[in-house]
Image 1 (cartoon, rainbow, N blue to C red):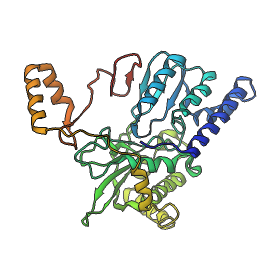
Image 2: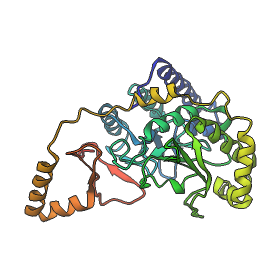
Image 3: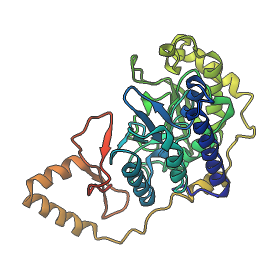
Image 4: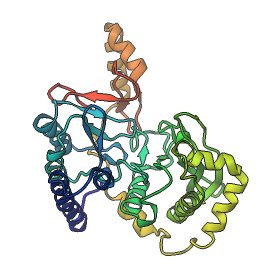
Length: 360
């Protein structure tokens, strides 16, 4: 996964210091509720009916063991001993005290985590397939592209106050496990007739009050133009999206109102000013990002022998056999499998107790 450099750490530490001062001014009465509202939202803090809620960013759903332990520690120190995983692969603390949030953010920064752009009308966490990097049906691992989008979108001054919150997802496989078609922008990794990697871009999906499946607006986008094209889509939305009614402010409403062809034409017109500009990506940047997503040291396993052993265990244990049928799928490396847990929890939220024996 991506490793922060000195500039990343400095940005986070400066942000924590800034927010610590803002919180102190609010608690002392120097800042009103309305003045503090945008400041806390920019740092992931909601004040809900029963208690504050802090949403922590987990880029494309990846956590290392140090970060998981830190989340568990914070839940014990500042919350009720558990956290919630959100539908956007983030983590939520549902009972923190407002005065403790700056210290929580400081501890998160120490393990390369933050709550920036987890709320407000901005570009939210870019998500992807939970099996990214291990699925045999992938054209390419989508995580490096998610990281490119994350770095581009974080603190982007032009898109800090969009008409409404904005969500993107990237899928690298033929089987869409990231539900990209119900996102504001869906980025599907594809190959063209020349066997070149690029993207199919879909815009205007969403759930909520008006569920919409995103239509295709670009069948094949060469990968070097990813950021400039996304910028063109967001500029059209920023300029033309409704701001008078939050229930009609999402990009799915704009696409439906304009029509797919007219919206696509508006994006292409905007893109003509951006294409081949400073945001054009080069192979060096793709390779740099890919270098952060290395495979573990897989052992060489006799796939046939492993399969026979697995089938024998399935025959002996009916419950285990049912779990394997439901939860185990093929891995890209011979002798391995990928699996997911079937949790008896609400679909919209995944709760985890840090004191349990839960393992990913």
